[in-house]
Image 1 (cartoon, one colour):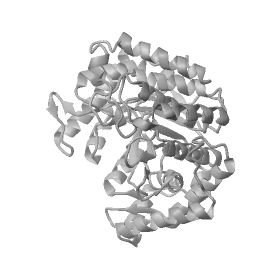
Image 2 (cartoon, rainbow, N blue to C red):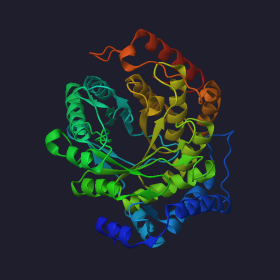
Image 3 (tube, rainbow, N blue to C red):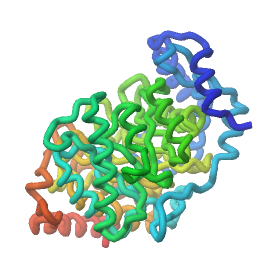
Image 4 (cartoon, rainbow, N blue to C red):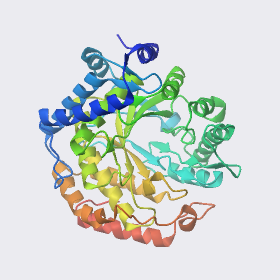
Amino acid sequence: MKITMTEIVERALTGKPCSEREFDIKLSKRARELAKEYGVSSDPANPVPKDFGLANSVFKAGFQLFCELGAYCTSTNRIISFSEEEVRYALKYTPAEVWFGEGIDKKALIPRKPEDKRPPWCFLGAGGAPVSSEQILSILVENYAKIPQANSITTPALTRVRGVRISPGTPLEILGAIEAVRIAREAMRRAGRPGLPIMNLVATATTDSSLIAALNSEYGARPSDGVLVGILAELKTNFALLNKAFYAKSLGFRVAGELGPVYGGYAGGAEGTAIVTVAEHLMGLMVYQADWYLAFPVHAIYTANSSRELLWVRNVSAQAISLNTNLLSLYLSYIAAGPMTEMALYEIAAQISSVVVSGVSIEAVGVAKARYEDRMTPVEPKFAAEVAHASTRLNLQDVNELVRRLLPKYEDKLKNPPLGKKFQEICDIETGRVSREYLELLTKVKKELSDLGLPVE
């Protein structure tokens, strides 16, 4: 039988007591042990492996890790445990498709497999990066919605509302969350795509109260949109996150388990981070009753995921999930460089092409680590979508060679990446029209990619 959200909360209240430090140490130790036990070993020279035996081993290790450790609730200092049988049952009966959007923009998100020739789902936009005003949010979302390959939109997060900086946990955050949804919906209507789903519905909301307030349908939220519920690093949750999941599920929203294992943290190196990525997919399934998954393994120092080590983690874990489950997984790209830089476009090409061929769909793109205000334009997600569709013509060996040739173009700059320019320095603030200089740079990089075997239209 399916485990209910009520049972999840009961287990969080009555599970085995454990200190957070003890849980962290045990996770770190078991991830290393399971990597050795299952023969999981990374190969930095080949960031896109074609070894399905390796991918299957990563899945088995991640499955065992989650079944042994469970999920840790920091609100109660107790472990939410599941049996192997419960996890296998949930995997067996997880939906093979989930519908998003309305009208002509309604579409089913379906699972993919490695070297799948079907185009991936393209969840396009800002990746939740911060913007300084309602005007910039509006024009960005309008132009995201004009991207032909867009199946859904990822909105920016407002840092100010009506000129006042938002402080988390205050009424201003609630107002900002409500305004962000309302503005985004109106912007998509102007673009002629009112039915497009927003899959990070309330990026401005950091607290459970502001999310719950903004999910009111009067402000434009729809059950056919997506709501992200984060997993804390590593394999942790709390009551605020469970509140988000419980409320969103009760209204019929499509809930995502959002997971970002940290390379160089408690997950360890590349092998452990790949294993924990699988385990956290399973945590999303069991603890949040997730309908879909958003994965972004991230580097502890670079806070991006385009390094050689992270590309291997992303691709082997994507293959592990896509080969062994029907979980609807999208991989989010955080790039280190800012807009209107060659480095940003190289990072996007390396990340997007490899995960698409590894069998998952995409969210694109968190530019400049999604950290700096207004460091994004419509160019980056549009380019990512073009790369994603073009990549379906490649196999794993092709894309491995492509990525091997792209990495030397940017990896030595990851510690100190160029931030590029802000939206208002690149685009017309009224229309979003992109500068000639950026379009010329884009044409140059597309020509390079074509010469490397990836013709991007």
